[in-house]
Length: 252
Ligand code: GDP
Ligand code: MN
Ligand code: MN
Image (cartoon, rainbow, N blue to C red; front, side, top):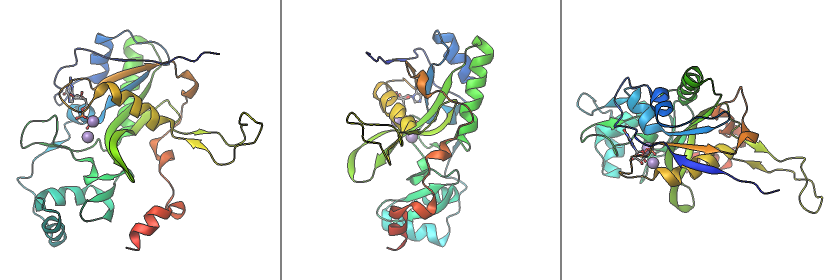
């Protein structure tokens, strides 16, 4: 059977400001259908939630001063990252942390691109809740049941090239477990779990781009097999006791 996936941007999204209703903007500019996967750059979710800040009033700790000196960064910026982190996995030459929400990324996902000079954007505090709210908003406006994935661009260990990754979601299973299914030769798969939410984020990111394209929302149509309720991005975070890479980093 031929499988087919459609992906398209939602056009005419303005520069987002605090208080903007993303669900309404999306519904105004596209014909939503049931089971659409609405993929949204975290940047605009953060802007709409007012998650911007400046470095002006931040007083760096001694630790922030030490890391900043090693990394050639502003100590107030390092303090902002530490304030949003549960654990620091690598301090230098890159600051790799686990955010308060459990996402592991560089500099806690704090971003200065696609915002005004001098302003920084932090990730949504609870991206699953943000995704859920937008899915509800779209349901209210259109009576269509959609899935929402909120993305950010992250680097990858071992490989050059950043990709879109999921940082929050609603109504979509982030992982497809293939264990127990058979391969083409009848062998039973034993360990494969597919990172569906990140694959979708990466696909949508192909249309979003990283610069001035102005395409923060992408709809994927044709993935209804992954629609699910009662889900959280936290299903994708490897439990501490099973994480050999983290164990290795801690022993450095
Ligand atoms: P991130 O991956 O969430 O950090 O977001 P990016 O900064 O990479 O932006 C992703 C896409 O959204 C790019 O096409 C940007 O041009 C676009 N974008 C960012 N902010 C806005 C905005 O406020 N309005 C619109 N229309 N596009 C935006
Ligand atoms: Mn970002
Ligand atoms: Mn990006």
